[in-house]
Image 1: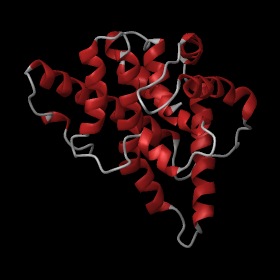
Image 2 (image 1 turned 90 degrees about the horizontal axis):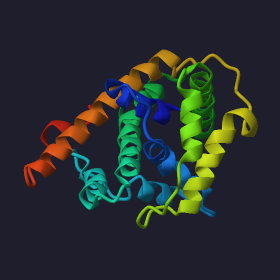
Image 3 (image 1 turned 120 degrees about the vertical axis):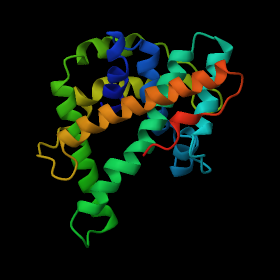
Image 4 (image 1 turned 180 degrees about the horizontal axis):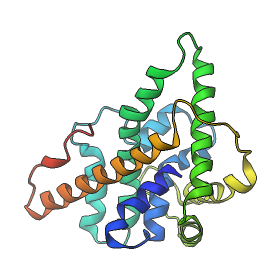
Length: 224
């Protein structure tokens, strides 16, 4: 829900809801969870983090620029995918770092992990219940057509993750029913706005660099 909220927020200036392809791209990297016997290495690879990226996120830049250059009609999907990757990086630097610094000391790794997912699951459910665009976004996601993405994910994996997302809140998982303490709805709403602004700024800088025949990324820079 956070990734979909960022996608919607990015399109507020245009007064529109993102296209089905953009919305599908914005959740697609996590489709790696649909692959049998997958592990952390696979997740790092589809998130373009198998090896460290530059401060200007050149791996993400190269991925989306490829689709801009091809004019293949898949640019919206690639932009959504890139938005997801950039949002994850910002989340780690901000929300996740704050969470780790504020939880009670002495918790085991499994206790930290359980607490983290209880709180983020609840935030996701709260967004699902509260967001006025949810019905329209669900309809557009359902209409999206999954396709293979280079050597990263198959259309089948992306389609399975899309279907799981559409059914998750109503059928596949129970809501935790808690009041988040360390990752609050207010925190996440602030993050959504920050991420959307940062991603739009990156895309604008990258498109400008293409227009100027290979100029530097410049204003995108570091996330924080």
